[in-house]
Length: 124
Image 1 (cartoon, rainbow, N blue to C red):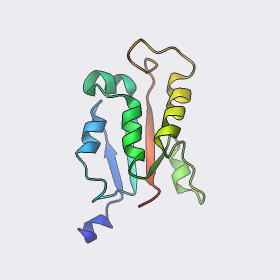
Image 2 (spheres, rainbow, N blue to C red; image 1 turned 180 degrees about the vertical axis):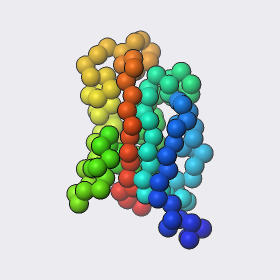
Image 3 (cartoon, rainbow, N blue to C red; image 1 turned 45 degrees about the horizontal axis):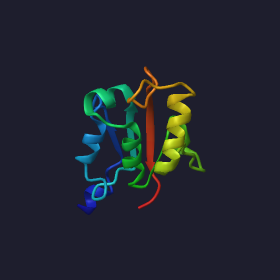
């Protein structure tokens, strides 16, 4: 396990709305990847997996990952992430995904919004 743990660098997930389910099936404590990349597509999360996007972001940050839409931020000398906690993720999502629009009732997302997120393990 120790040999495997040191070699896990990137996890790319494209689960068409089932990302939270895929991440829950991955033991991120035992096998912490240095980087995680995934698409945040709220309408697919709601339709396919009945998942609130904030729950997905909170799950990722709970394992010590900071996330950004700009992957170059992960490789700078001073790591810059858009959010590192559930609270920061909620504010980021409200500002970025909802962008002042009123989401359809019961969905919590602005129709059509999606982005790629790149996350880096910030702590053990």
